[in-house]
Length: 208
Image (cartoon, rainbow, N blue to C red):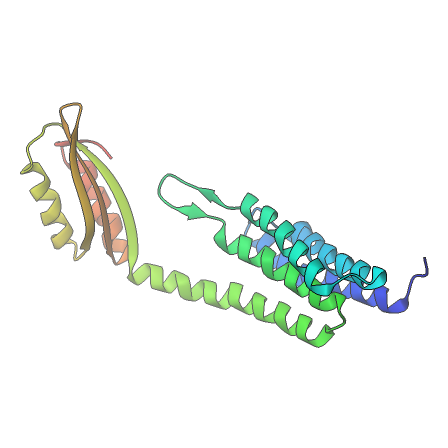
């Protein structure tokens, strides 16, 4: 099979765009880092080139690439005890494949612009998220008290108010003759930290 100079350009550009995005993910120590993002972008480019060579339907190939990328994206998402992690990395994988497909069909300018936009979103918007989190930090707690008296939770609610926090939700129930409370608070990050420290001092709370 003849190797076209245009194909070489597409491959090199795919590696470059994938590297731009992958460097940021690697720097942030994410599960899908430098090499992974490059390979995803490169793979999408190669599949698109192959589809053009064999005369396949672009829509069909695109759908299959998206399906395959979906499996990879799902692999980097995992649920922790309190939240879900990896959603941003999964989205980056999805966009990296889209960039690879754009390069594969020869839309070089749009693919480079998209890679730069993704880098901008990950770096600048990430700092904005941190600022938002500082002013409106959320934290979930599961508290176990040493008795079943509902009045023991009143002190916790007072602590929430004292630290200028908002009690977003609470679920009170009894288990093994102990009062248990699942709750979520929000507010300034420093106040949330102080609130946590105060909870640790409460003798009525035997487990957090």
